[in-house]
Length: 285
Image (cartoon, rainbow, N blue to C red; front, side, top):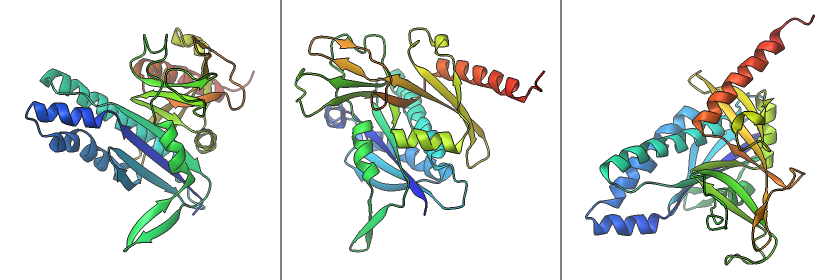
């Protein structure tokens, strides 16, 4: 075993959703199964993933990376994460039309360059991995209420560094995440993705307000042989000084990586990357 990728899909507000559905005489167990758990299960074979466990309203998945085999584990995990968010957004459109509550997720993807460890409880295998703790943080969402943030962004990822105790966040919580139907990669996952597939850096100026961000675009074949585009946004962590948010430079340890699901950004990135590949193939002179 060479390494492994852990993916966590963390469902938000399940307690409130369950209570509201019960008040309306609806069946929450059936709703969550049809709109989240069953669709996720249907994706596992497509990406060679396995379910590690279900933690309350969160699903932990894993893709193993075998030595001497081109498994592209991180690329496949990114494809799986994208499909999970895509199915939730599509199901939300249907739920909106039917007057049903909408689901909200946060997804985290982390890579470890070594095999996971296992414990056994009465024959039941328990996966032990440092990536599980990391995806807990990546998939979390505590930055929703910061002043001036999220006014024009209904989903995606942002990371905020807390300079002072503010909005009920203790000083020990140095970083606070906003992850609403978004996907965040840890640094080892992004670095390994760059080893698995060719990533092209495209112009950030094409994305309107996001001129300070870098975008990396690449393609990989899923297990069915279909070519998939992947776009990763590299952005600076914002700072909260107790009164307002401010930007910062993308120095080491002061930035984060988001797997993009915005259709407009994906479309523009694919066109720009295809153009870059065309020029790469041209004969010099």
